[in-house]
Length: 501
Image (tube, rainbow, N blue to C red; front, top):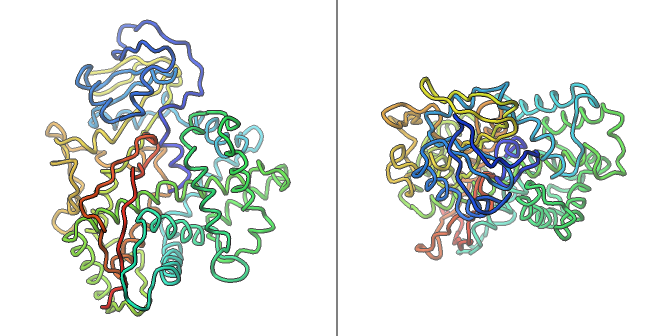
């Protein structure tokens, strides 16, 4: 997923803005969830099980309440019917100052400030348009080819026998490499980067401590993390990247922007903007996409009847395009064909609904009365955080019947994508929010969805698939609550073999 995911899915432990601890509530402010632990407040309870904790507070205090978490007062808006009024606030509720302080320190580069680099940050944000619209077509073609390359060389077994692999590892290795090749390009010689596995190992080490970094824990307290980060950043040295071919227009444009800034050309500093920014893009491209791909594939293999429907629709779309699929031939699905796979998209959305734990936050820029709806408003103070936690909506039985169960066709109605979901008899404007919302919605969401679709399509087309233990169901790891897609608590063993027809 794109770097915007860092901006819209923020760990609840982050609190970089100083504020005095408030020992009293003013009239008009939401009820405060009390805690006997100074500063830390309810951070530990939230980290243990955010959804359970917030639902307990909603039952006690209603749909709007404030929680002291790690020294910061966070007002949670739990009613999704109120989301539009929060999301449309721009002047009084902002997030950019927050990200300009937290994200650079996490990835190892100084803030891109307008007074230092006039107009650069705005141009960087506009570069994300190269991951959308018509620009998706060449990215889709490149990603499909790179996935086929990895599948063919690593997983196509000519003897046709069953193979086993850890399913998360299978998804992680294929998606990491194919995404890297698609965005950054191929090496000077050969079709694959020889150090890719070592790069992924270091990336996983960094990603494991990412929740602590985004929580502003000093990097020097985190063992070898700084050295690992520098190794990852050094992979993007200009003299190395200049030899790569088939680089995406997105990365080429960002490189051009940085190269135009004379003070950013010190390649001897690993904290220089271009190198560390490229690393941040790598993290944002795969950190959430990999677990999202795992859950999409896992739920389909777990439900063979759903897998068969999705597989058949893929075959039908190919046939409608004049292609009779054969597992012995290379297959390309275009962006338009991917858009027609409504059961596949519904399955992915359903897996995102069950695994997403992103949090949308805004920071109050002044003391003001926040209008919730036509009848209600609450007073908030400058520096307070307003938080939407969509997981509670995703698991609301009034919105989603039997919410803990995977239903692959939940988002399909009359052979089209279903968008009508209701709360208290009112249609929801926002009903599925794994990518954030409003001005901070993930600009790479279309690319991410296409990547997941392509992986699942090839997996279903070319392999027979089984879970070694059909009764084993991994739970969600809670230590990344607020950061996007939760990882599985344990891996599962996937059995697969090349399809005969």
